[in-house]
Length: 288
Image (cartoon, rainbow, N blue to C red; front, top):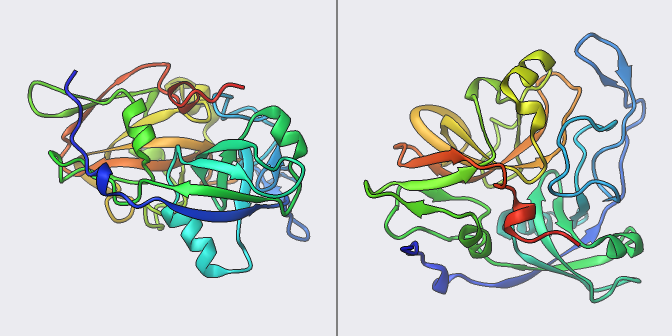
């Protein structure tokens, strides 16, 4: 199989540090269902013990549930943005303080914080404030024969693990777990595609079931037609973006599982086909 030509030999590797966060709930934080009822649910930040890449994105008694460990450097804006902009999916992580010192993990997503997954034993030992150092590697990665394709949050490790091939017609082919219609994409369209994710609108549960979207798993690689994510997230006829499901469903109107951009081609030079194994839990070997 012909290998893709990249500039990965020129990429800079840097150490970036974050700390384990704790769950945060604003005073009076009721979350409204679409019918107006409200509830209080867990979901964002901290250490989530029982949700991992490969698990379902729908069906949890939670809101925006994040798999693994959520880290940040909230007190320092420069470090906060370095974590967000320089980290890539598949980067190595190591615990550098606390009971789990020396344990190794991997970056699996970016939400309001950076998401890192370790094995279950390490998750049990981690505590708020424990420091985690990440070897950032991937920002600036490019496909030399496809300059029109933007790579976002893509480590070389993930790129090579995704099973991307070139067709006889000079196009890229990417295995994906499912396709999402652009009409259901919601909150996050206003953000640039290097920073945080975009939620799909999942309030119409019958539509989610009809389209099979309610079967989405955390870590699924997905495709969206007519989505140009080069500089932000906008509609462009014929464009294709390849993304990653990084957090769980929400009951909030306009919100649902979060989709992080990995690749975007405004000219539609990306083809894709459905493969149930197109999930980073399989591709990066994230089992314990």
